[in-house]
Length: 138
Length: 241
Image (tube, rainbow over all chains, first blue to last red; front, side):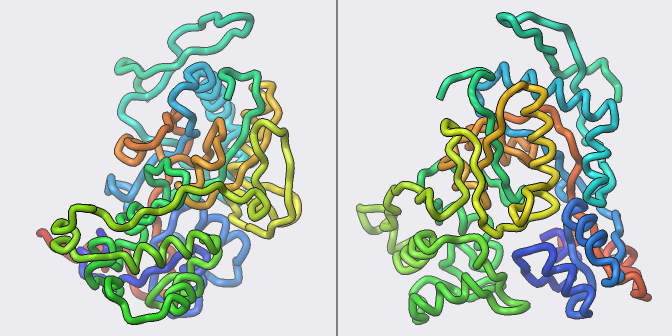
């Protein structure tokens, strides 16, 4: 939609790999794709001679964060998963995981970053409670 | 399902860009038309857009099914990998039941389309019910780098889910979901690759963890392309400007 508003002709595709193959064949000039699919495609198909341009970083509607979804009732699980993700990001393990598939890690962007607030004890398992904080600058 | 971490965790694969709030037990065709199909078939298929008007279409059911499955290069995406036969039935039924807004409001019955709730057939997918432990099938679905079932299951979402399950100390059972309405059928504990957007999650039954990756839109161009698409796009004023 945003690209159409800029006067460009857009053609619908269902799958990103088909889009990038169409760029390589010259059928279309460029493809608007996600960095994850694109990174993988370039790694698997270096002979296609494609490159990526990250020119929309400042357009909010064309960028979004990914997370792990959970049912609303699972507060305890959410705290645990938050702690695990925090650790994976801090140690660089998450970046390594993405790198295994040829994808440069892109840290999430958000206004109110999560931080570890305090530890609490629930039953016999200790968990790390995470929350938003205005004071925590990333 | 029981609460807490004592149960078996499970992971759902979603095509992240298509996550839309839906919690029905069947395919939510109106929601599908409000999002994916509606980009080209406007007003729920009542008006022509990039694609033709579908209301009162003279095309046969088989033609419509074939077009959804196989698409038409450059005009209509091929969704053959995504919809099972029953979902195609529901989509065709929706199209056949389409009435103009005026006609529909004149009828006291309201929306004439009533999809029939039904169970997801376990045998079709690689569904591994959360309560019955892990299982795998030989389905050839391949959505790498997110997750793939071809050969040894792997992918970013699966790898991350394995790490999470290991650190939680729970066993991992995996359900495979392609479209958001299938999520309810899977009834899993965690959903990988969820877009952390309040609006997108508004009507879903999901909360999200802290964000872990910044996704978005980048442009793929030919390496030897002499034109500069970036400047081309940047230099064009928006329609509203």
